Image 1: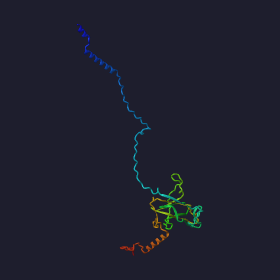
Image 2 (image 1 turned 90 degrees about the horizontal axis):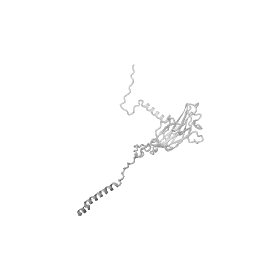
Image 3 (image 1 turned 60 degrees about the vertical axis):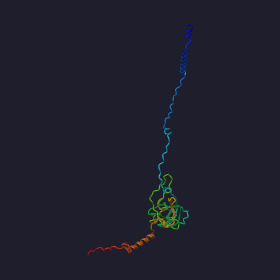
Image 4 (image 1 turned 120 degrees about the vertical axis):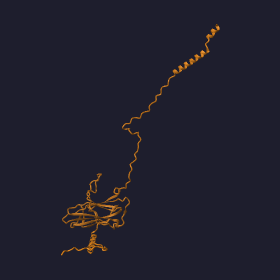
Length: 296
């Protein structure tokens, strides 16, 4: 009886093991419950770009350069690229030496070129005059005063050596008006001049000119016409391709002179006298002109 009660007082080994396992589980549970949970991670949204304003709109956009429009190559205009100059003559300068000029029935006065008192016509001719540059175009502008019944007729010649001359070219008024001011507002030195026709030489250049003014009035009761001055506008528009004339035959033909007209008229009259029908001498099968029928 005593042994049995003693065995009842000793706990069973299996029970001890079970209790130990239960204790361990309880400890593990308590430890895991008391462990702090990690803070939740909040993903930040990417920053939004700033709103575009009227000032910044399009500032951050890539700049694209547009290709320039194709350009056509054009040849330079001869007139706009030409070398040009003016030769100015003042016929009112009584102190100037005019001995090399030919004055026939004219004289120099403070007003300009006028007819001699007893002359109804006369001329004023310059010597060989060098242009400021060899030119392929020369235009004459002149001033004139024309009382009723008077005329002024300018002429011009060209030369390459002051020895061989072109024909005398008559210069006529173009009838154009010259404005007192240039488009930019500067005064126009050509204002008050008569714009005359020009002589053009193509690609040929000429370095010298000679000019002549012919004055006339109907009778001595008329006042004399007056030529106070002249301007010669000349240019080289050949763009470097021009060459100075070396043959007088290269100059443009001028109108027939009085002698040439007289010779031409005489030859024409002689031809008409020997051949009134105007039939060539070597012509054949020419019908005989019939006589008009007459009635008795």
